[in-house]
Amino acid sequence: MIKDPGRRYSFGFAGVAKYVARYRELRSEACMSRTLKRENIKIMNRPTVLITGSGGELGHGLIQYLSAEGKYDIVGLDLNEPANQDGMGRVEFHKGDIMDRSLLDYLFDRFNFDYVFHLAALLSTSSEKNPARAQDINVNGTFNLLERARKYTEKRTSPVVFMFPSTIAVYGLGSVAEKTRAGKVKEDQYLSPICMYGVNKHYVEELGRYFSTTYGMLESEQRRLKLDFRAVRYPGLLSADTIPTGGTSDYGPEMLHAAARGIPYSCFVKAESRLPFMAMPDAVDALIQLSRAPAKSLSRRVYNVGAFSVTAEEIYREILNYYPDAQVDYRIDPKRLEIVESWPADIDDSLARRDWGWAAKYEFRNAFRDYLVPGVRKHYGTRKTEPCYAVGQA
Ligand SMILES: NC(=O)c1ccc[n+]([C@@H]2O[C@H](COP(=O)([O-])OP(=O)(O)OC[C@H]3O[C@@H](n4cnc5c(N)ncnc54)[C@H](O)[C@@H]3O)[C@@H](O)[C@H]2O)c1
Image (tube, rainbow, N blue to C red):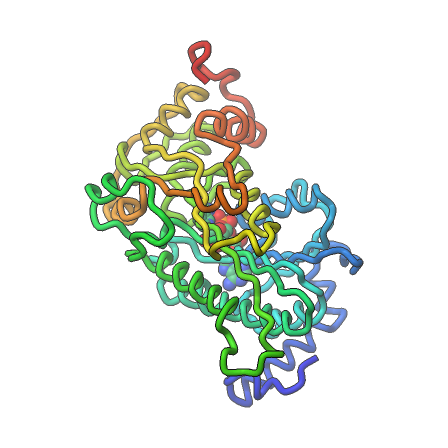
């Protein structure tokens, strides 16, 4: 219920009236039938999960995983409906904006969220093109959600677990020579991001730590049950199911999807540009595993998770094993290249391995052989039947 919205938010009378009207609208049946894509989930005594960015690449993989487990009630929130609803099971989708505070209040009032997976974001290239929007979505929108989850935690006996996908964009290496020298970067090294997205994500990591530790330090003890914020820093993600948009590591998945569709691809970084990457099922596993790790085993709130480190040319050569007529040329975008060159060649994930048993299932070769190529073939059809590896090579 809204008790005193005027006190809770610093917007003026018109803003309050709009907020109340919007909240009432959200509660009305008429709106419910517009916003829900599927039959309402039945609220049972099962853990409930909110997934923002549920229409995106990672959201798609996470919902598929949780739906298959069948242990959770799942609520999705995204600006867009999911393009691909394969394997999504019973999920209640809400089409809406994380900037819509009345919508967030409505969702937190209606559901007993045990977990929030906050995936909604503007990715790196899109953020660089529109830093004000990036600040709004990546920082202010996240603050809205952290604040709701924190308030809601006060009503509970255990904290809401707030999962956040951070990124290697939080790192900023000064030059290619430094990048080469640095090798596998640890969590607390080189935290000087050059791009807006990295700045946003790094700030949110700090916000999450604050909300989970010192928030409310001037208040009385009984109001101090904290949020349980946990984050993974991902490398570039490679999905067989969806084509990414707006990221700077997108050349990896774009190259594969172009080859599968039989169209040439112009790569915007150099052949020798190197980044760490991870297959989408491992990205989902990392988020799930960290969300379930006992709090006492965690020595920090933000963990690097790694899988394999490859150059653009190595990705192209691997694709040629499956699509021998794949065509890639290099048409460098100097600005996007600069961003890629500031990100580490690889990341040290030994703390995640030690604290919660992280280990990627997919290395470079088996990611293509067992996940990416079979997945894209399912989508686009089989253009070439077998990989052209020499015997024993894979
Ligand atoms: N894809 C990668 O390589 C990668 C790497 C590191 C971290 N991440 C992080 O993982 C998360 C998911 O990434 P993804 O690859 O699925 O990206 P994506 O772009 O496919 O999905 C993001 C989703 O967020 C939604 N969204 C954006 N603004 C919103 C708003 N204001 N309100 C509600 N929904 C909104 C978009 O509609 C989109 O469906 C992001 O936080 C991203 O920063 C991704």
